[in-house]
Amino acid sequence: MAEVQPLRGIRYAVEKVGDIAQVVTPPYDIISPEAQERYYTRNQYNVIRLEFGKTQPDDNTLNNVYTRAAATFAEWRFQDILRQESTAAYYMYQQTFMHDGKRYTRTSLLGRVRLEPWSARVVLRHEHTLAKAKNDRLQLLRASAANFSPIMSLYDDPQGRIRRLLSTYAADAEVHFDDETGEEHRLHAITDLQEIALIQDFFSQRQLYIADGHHRYETALAYRQEILEQRKELYPADAANFVMMALIDVDDPGMLVLPTHRLLFDMSEQALGQLTQEHLSQFFTVQELAATTNDEVQRHLLHAGHQEQAAFVLYRPEQTLLLTLNEQGKAQMNDRGHSQAWNDLDVAVAHRLLLERFLGLNAQDMTAGTHVRYTHDTSAAFQAVQQGEAQVALLLNATRVRQICDVAQADDQMPQKSTYFYPKLITGLVINPLW
Image (cartoon, rainbow, N blue to C red):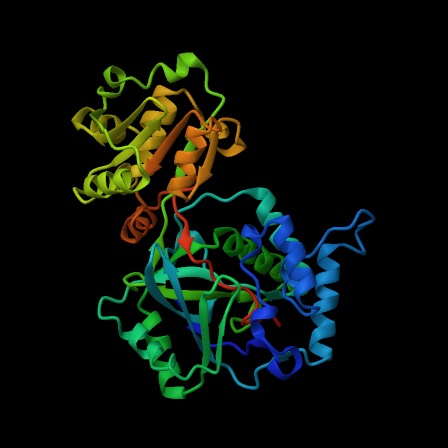
């Protein structure tokens, strides 16, 4: 099964940069242009210059965002701003954060994982990838030969053995800081040889589920293939055979997945005319809700979700409907050629039966942003409809972590925007060199 090794990580030298909080960022794919500029001005050594640099009008094949990242990476190593560990280590990485008034702690193990093709069923996926995003990451990987941010992956540990081992390091973690959102981060290197052997042995009997980072994993596979073609041979221990991951117990109490609601706009009156109780009752048990506030709708949604039946709320200015899949709806889902794990997803039911069947939208409509926008904020969804920015809000429960694993085990892929793991892993704590 999975081969998870310690790595000689590259880390910021605290005596050179000072407050680590000033040089780290969220992952590149959630950084807005405004945030990118903010990180650039925050600190001259901020990792934004490596992970998500600025493009320039005169960029060319010899001077561009990727070559500048590689040059900066080399310069910082030369200046001892970034320093490679003298020995290989795993890293305990813990995040403590607030959400909806509740405090969570999520514990990860940072290590390097041997790359395996999807067909080997060692690393499992649940998501489709996009060529543009993979090309961007591949160009950065070619230029820098390093993983600047870890892939988030899950593992199954019913007894919680690894999580308990990691938590022993949290109280006296060598790196401890709060980021700009108030989230706490703790990092500690694990170099004890007995514990390293224990961790390696544990994962040798485990499959891994990618939670967040499918594009980076496929990019790592493509990079390894390019290196193999260039060199004609790759030794098993070659660093190009590995990619950095943050490994998290599926049952970690801090493993939080947020719902992603759908906002529909620019729909024709003919299409919206399909959203009547009469039409919807073909596939759903329809309950009209008097409740029109955020908290009340969430309570209805959670209650329906606890019945282990696909359910979501359709919110329009004139009415609020709770839709729960009925037997006819189940038959329709089972006739779609997907796994049972996929058919059971609230988001899959919403896409297949509501967006596609009733409203006539296709996959391109949902990815191109022509009729569908997304938000994780229920209040923002309500507000968008009330202010006329959207015609309909489709409010969903979060996909459960075990459902994600079930879909991956079934070798199926979820619809777009099915999961949002919160919070994201920070970028810049540990860099994995591929040399």
